[in-house]
Image 1: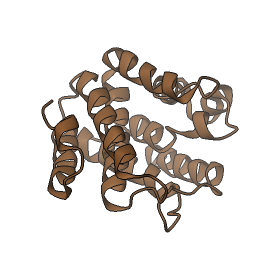
Image 2: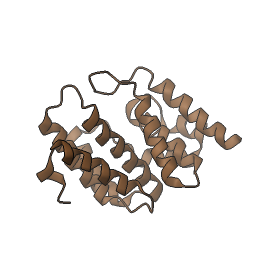
Image 3: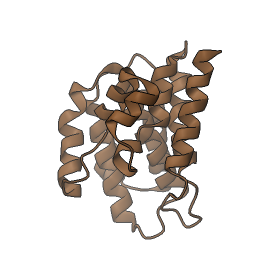
Length: 187
């Protein structure tokens, strides 16, 4: 029961911290939907659910996109959750292009659990780009994102889960829509 409390606390914390955030699609989908999707993908991939990893999946964007501090995360959720969230967090003080380069460069060095969160995040983003694309993104930008996401995932350590297959299947949806075939389906 106490383990389940951790997940509910993480869900409530993420919902509060991201309460005003929306996805970039035309409908402005509540951001919490993305976080729940990432956590669900991780939970399903884990088999025997590791609640701290699932909690970190729910919280994976709090350091990057909210006023949450690493110390606050650790005080509420413990050092392991903080560490996992920090592993997948971009440094927003850097230019966007540099942050993207660093995701590719750092992917091989992620822990297995952080790689699971990173891949689940990319699955959610790829699905959204294909099904509910950002309103102001032309096809060229969507294509570039898919290619970059494929590069990040390809460099992540193998997780021993279905996440890599699910990611590939999600990219296959782009092929069916004719988005970016030449850019990322040869990987």
